[in-house]
Image (cartoon, rainbow, N blue to C red):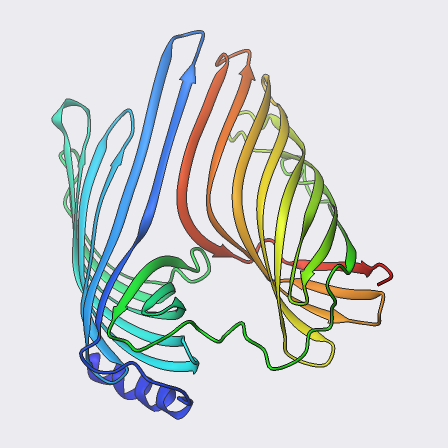
Amino acid sequence: MKKVFFTLSSFFLSSISLFAQIPANTKILGFGGSFRYGNMAYPNADIHNSSLNFSPELTSGKFTKENTAEGWIVNPSVMYNYTNWSPALSIQHFNRKYVSLTPGFYLFGEATAGTQANLRFMERNAVYQTYQVSAGVNLGLTYFYKNDWSLEAKANVATVYASHYRSPITPTQNLVSLQSNLPTNFFELSLVKYIGSQNEKSTLLTSKRDSLYQVNQRFITGDISATALFNENNNYLNNNTQALQAGFSIGRFVTTTYAKGFGITARFNKAPEYTSIEEWYPINSKTAGFSIYKFHEYYFPIAKKLSLVANARINASYAYAKEEAREQITTHSLTLFPSIIPAIQYQINDRWALTGLIGSFQIGSVHASYEKSAWRGDLIRGGISFDPNYTLNNSGVSLRYFLKK
């Protein structure tokens, strides 16, 4: 597998390599991973339950020759909640081939092979065991934000694994499977130091074209989206959904390639459906809320009227949800989270522009909610997470108006 991977990747990557390379003997030291903590409390019953998921990822390697590296990825983790806790350890060997897209910005292909062990300790001393060997192919990007220091984003293309599962109450199970994580968890983010790479700060965001905008130029952005689905084919399925979202923001250019401002987004969703298999009782749910955010935008001119845009923002959102089934449940929730939204902007004329949003890069969040239910009683939830990932569920087009200069 290693020979096939390097033959194909070397042919493709070498054919488009145009810039400085990473020399042999460069060392790789990296850190990434995820962290989640949550707490759930029933105040009336004086019950408190906590959950924790901590999964650091350590990378160590060395370049065996120019633009070719190998090494190890070690990923210890622990998961805990009020019914069980689960320690795990994953060790993988990697081989990478890099190609420079611009100075300080690289694309790499990665082949991995390794093993993983997971133990799950339940109540009454029950222990569930999973042992796994796997091989995978990943694609990644390395961006040097200063000398020898980089941010790396990596996507899993495909993984094949064989696992052995042992349980104290069920027969032993063996499984062989092929999977891809690309649609669900597009990126994992790491901070990596390349010791001796001779790479300075990337020139990716340095354009040779003049900016289309001027200092102190102001703009207003608006967007609206609506969804209406009607499905009543029989007495057991009623999946009518209506959703409406509208947003507004105002910004100002601080430099010709950097702007900042504020925005607000309001949303409403109504989705009734039958879900009870036993009695087919309907569940009608409604959600309404809003988000306020402060944003910073960075522009990269790529054509006469076209610019790439990175919109970094801090969001604070509130949502009210009401669910009616056998009982009525109401929920109030607050969330604070940073995000980065890549976009491409086309300047139609001096006053108007179209901005296409291309997904959203979520870094983590802090959240809290209060749920009121007659049957279960009051429930309070809260938590914090750091789990970088990129999703395409926030894509769309907005219209932007530029005020007089």
